[in-house]
Length: 462
Image 1 (cartoon, rainbow, N blue to C red):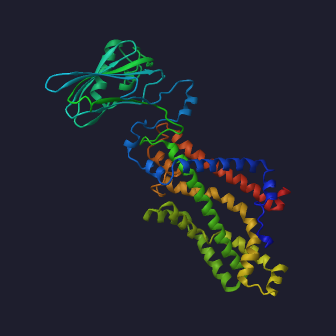
Image 2: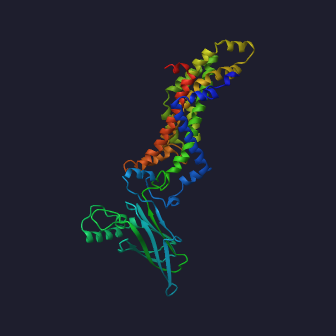
Image 3: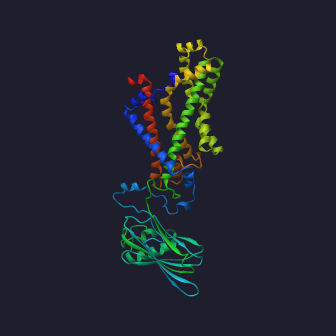
């Protein structure tokens, strides 16, 4: 029974593990990953994260597209990047005045006021209009210096209409021509967003101060009518957003427990199965050993990744079925030969002969004496192999062959690749999930190397 005391997990070995600075760093990183996992499970219980991640764009309609994380502002040389501003009914920035007209038609005057002190223009400007079909809206824009320009007339076709100012090509052309007539040639491309926030100069410079969106409306029911102005920022949250406006922190947080669970389970199951098969092969020898070794050699010749990709292409696998497939393709790996060699040495030891004399059966000897003797030496390799399975899942997701439902780090990288994130300069989209993968790899690798020095005494002398 003494062989069930596994070095590295007892108090003495844990204390020795902490003497290694590399192991201490690995444990700290692993503790942070575990803390993120617990936090994500608490914030997104059950399938909440999956539902959020697979939600339609309207779920995140008030988030900017492809927005950098807020910490990216550190690299902008002191420039303040715009955050999303929302002027909605009921806020202090929203004022309304309704006057009854003729034939049941009301004239409604709305004023939406906001302060703007950022160094760049918004990424987009939308006006959300709620009312009755056929209501008419006339929109004006007032600058901090008092300039007033006409934007557009909007007639509601449904009870909710979204007016996308940046996509109004006639408005863009008209505002650009007016700007050319006032100041001549420009040194920037005059988009709607730039024109509505520019000072009158050839070079673009944001005019800071208090702006107003004024609306004169003819409506049939003022109780149903409202306006909402949304100025989309260029930075958002801790991790930014993707092309569907989804906050990337959902996938980064929820992907942490998925990656750890997948990597640890895959590594432990594969190692234990290979250990049992290898011990049986080395202990019994003869035809059993020959059969197992020939099967192992065939497995080792098979292109593991190619077969896994082929299976993933033909069958859309969820992450847990994928884990089972990986285990099945890995059970006769090189670990079988390693444990076989150790088992052949251990079975010749005196205490094994003594166990046989006392009447212990083969299975009892294998599981009570041989395996517990070998298992401690495999713990470092189990720990070190965890990142390889985490990277394998991420690689399959990057190729579009992973779980189509779960928000994982590999899925984020896959979306970034398909949307040309690096080409568009959206580096955060690639760097954040890559950083999580690197931290996971470093943490397990540092711990595994330290455990290897503890378990294998000869490494201590090096």
